[in-house]
Amino acid sequence: MSTACILAGGQSTRMGTAKATLLLDGKTVLEHLVQTFQPYFEDMCLVTRLDLSYSTVLIPKTYDRYAGVGPTAGIHAGLLFAKSDPVLMIAVDMPFASPQIGLKLVSLLEAYEAVVPVIDGKRHPLFSVYRKSLATRYEAAILSGKRRVESIYEESRVRYVTAEELGLREEESAFFFFNMNTPEDYAWAQKKYESYKRLQLKRGGRIE
Image 1 (cartoon, rainbow, N blue to C red):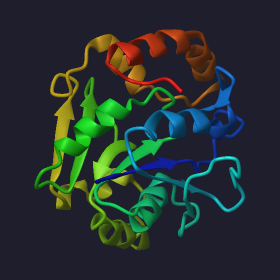
Image 2: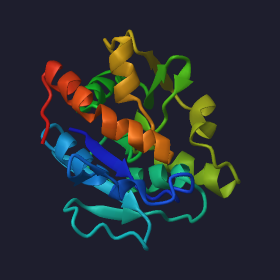
Image 3: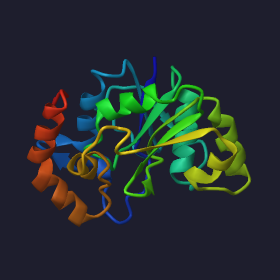
């Protein structure tokens, strides 16, 4: 059993508003992610900030224990809070993230401590799988001033996987690992939502 944990505590500086609240097909991005992943992950949780309640989202919530540290604090909080091990971390700015790819990442963990996709040469630490035991290592990194999520990778057993290993075509990678950070990105996501749905259904996924 594993947990899917959505990270939604960022400042959304470039977007100008909380990304989790943006609408896609009549639902917020956060609602869409919860409803997309719930059929595949019995355990789910949300990491956010105290000033962002998201009261309409009915999954267990926790909060960053270290303010101003960025997504590293979110991963740390999620690993501590998750009910089951390992934990799939999902950034809320990845509205087209695929639960089937998430399950594939979980299946590849084996004796590793983390599985991190590398798509077109870029690591995606915020759609990756981590062992709960890494919470201690992340806390030590935070307390020593290391804020990057990847700061613990060198001292951890990390498996890096490519799009080919995940069975993804180029078009699928472009959707499933899309990061929505600016108003222009949001406009693209709105425009391409129907295309995403077709890809998800083609892979046997569900659209809620």
